[in-house]
Image 1 (tube, rainbow, N blue to C red):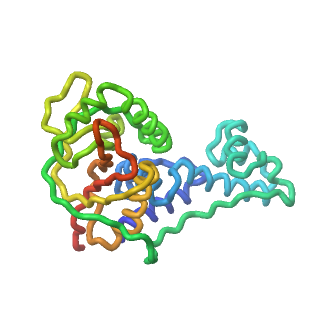
Image 2 (tube, helix red, strand yellow):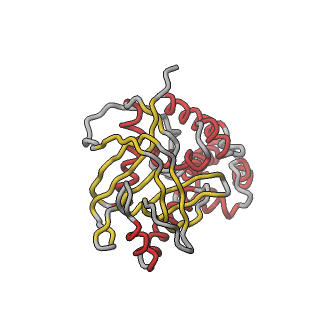
Length: 288
């Protein structure tokens, strides 16, 4: 359960720095992930983005201080990292539904978000259908968009990218390229370094790269493949959540840190809704 311990240590770092500067890079280092994959994993495991979690925890602590001390709103805003009263007021109202100064009134209703305590529970739940594959390198060709390390922004950008691309001629070209496994249209989040983060809509193929498209080769690896029915967006988020919290802790494997692959079937050059696969690279856990 070392990954769980590392993630818990990263959360402890965040809790210790709620009234100080919080470095996403440092939290990711403690968790032994890149900043990009740490935010991605955090959102899947916890169910909210890292920035949302920090915002909720800071506003929880700010509310406690407003009620139990005589500190000015501006002083508390500065303490929790807000340079202006306006931004602090907006964040506070989003969490509590009232302005900060009103929180000083006895009887005001506030929302408290406790610190996350991670644990693995064995519960009777829905079966997870999966199989494991050993695959050589996967070469993909397609269209990509630039992402950032802020997962909150990416979660808004990626659906927009899909909506844009499926209407274009290039999408039909990508469909025609599909001649290697995994078959279908692929959605791939690729992190190279903080300046090079991309999301690809692509096919696995041996075809040459047309002008305006890009290729990438994903290293040979062992993959766990999950099959799911249902809404594509909810499906993918659900798979990653269950992978981290239910499958991985007891599997004898570790996350390999390669790009994750979403696989969406196509028929007559159109996406087929209601079914998808998620391919996640894994490696055997080292005995220490």
